[in-house]
Length: 293
Image 1: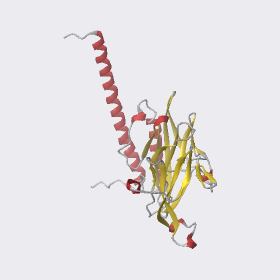
Image 2: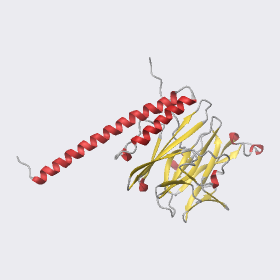
Image 3: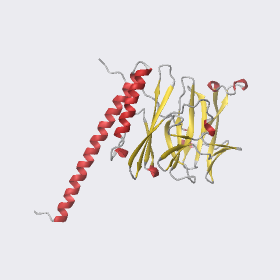
Image 4: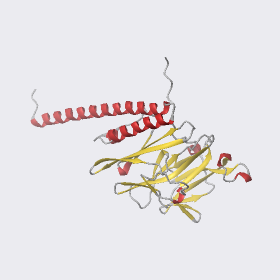
């Protein structure tokens, strides 16, 4: 049976699509494997210098590999300790992870993969070197980043276009952890963090930071039905321990930031029922299983 010209063209296009799809899948698989190897090499190294050197190899590999044409579709699911979150309307993804040092402190790393009219742009996020910054009142950018591993993304629903709320975890050491509510948006192709949209009484914050004992489970999650960011209320375990966050606990009461007229308003004693009570634990650095000899 002879094929007409139109049928032949369809067949050629279908074959081309299948070849491209297979090539894309192969590239994604190769990247998954390489990222897994680099990440495990970073985690398993016995000294900080080797951990950081291997981690830099991982960063270099991601910056190169994520620039390819179909890379926005590549998954990194094999490496569970790296968080990959989509920023849908911005055609972007934010990729973050932590690296634990020998003394159990954490360092944080991140990339933003952003599809622009000129191709895919990769922006490396660098933790700010500024000391004693009041982060709740400070804006940031790719060169001045409050390092975190982001575990949820929420449409900010404010005036700025392509603006997202990020829920993140930033373990400091074995004693203290933090979770944050942050904002990320794009000023043309530049990445920006923080906006004064969180109202807490008479104060407006650029972002919100919660500090609590590392051994404690602290819940911070988004209720999409009620459009509120719900969290445990933190209180000192004794009156003389105010500000000593290693001795804070939860009050078994929930507060929230609720969306109202393009602002997120702090509200006390919110009613939390059903699935909102489930604790959300962000992705942490995971030690890979040891290989048997």
